[in-house]
Length: 524
Image (cartoon, rainbow, N blue to C red; front, side):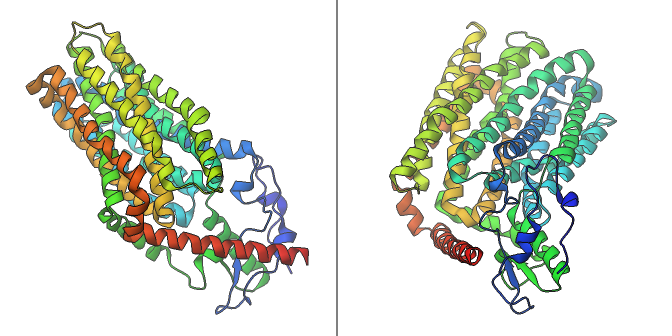
């Protein structure tokens, strides 16, 4: 029997293992090695190529790269806002037109995941991350040379559309790398970078716009994404288990002349086109589920309010208080502080509390156990928005509305982390489709909210315009409370949630049986 490959060719300097070629070849696989009954490939009992078996440093390195990429993408969505005055002067257009650059970018990274997320399950996370950021760098660089506002807007949409992979695939990467007990912290790190980016973007963008103009904002964003692309090329590893096991099955087939296939694909080979078509069309049916619909609306309103602030903060701090663009961007520091505090809260309070609850339930927590932080986060975000509305006028010291950005940022992170965790646990095998639909609707709200912010402030005044988001959040808070108490009953009566639970139990049972058989074979 020939070797799969040389150890030297398969070794990566940042992976602390050597591929166990002899063990892989000698393992007794289910099946007979024919087209009708292929050998079914899965992880060995102790498999160093399984990403969840990697040492801590390589796993956290991969998460850091994803966080770095997410920070770059989300900063690009908001830093553009600082370019508005310069764009208005150069191209002689209104603020509403230039603001489309934010909306189109956001709707782009909401639509992109419908394509990129399923492709990452076919061609691998690493491939799609690198492709995404190479294209983001390209289109952002092209934006620098745009000669009219139409070109700027088109290139901004393309930047968001191609660059959205981290937002769609990061959750899957976390699931690839970390067991359930560690996913809370890992998801908190990702969520924090997803909200730090929009808050940091106006700070850096404001000072660059003030000193160098709008083209250098896009230039800085292109450099940022280019550095991320280089880091991904040099350091990113593939983490998607189905992709890794399909590659292993292919190498085994070529090496032995027998037919090997990844266990998850069964006996039937599905083409990439079929997988992509199914993945693009399937998310929409889940929006008919009450749980998915309600939580998607909740998250969409929250996300819309986050992007509404990119139009509201310049009004409150630059127009009404006369601050410069650079100094005006510093007003977002309150939100930054809140995001960081939320991350610390997850690490030291929420995750240990969830693990304790899971232990009390015999090692398997209910999805509803994820929702307690969403209730706390909703109240915190409401306090932040009410406080901001009450102190937004220029006759109140500037530090007050900035401080109230902290409970808002804190609450937003807790809400997102709790709701995403709940949807993943409740819909398990369908989680990717549920989150894809959720992400698109969320992005649509985020794209729309900034467009009516300026007219709203003009017509209602600073206090009432700032209070509208608070009323929206207040209306949404009961959703988390109701699901926390009655979610299990609602899931049992929901078509897809009930089916997901049933299929997950079957998959777990099959995996446990396969692992037991593997262990018996290895001992024999």
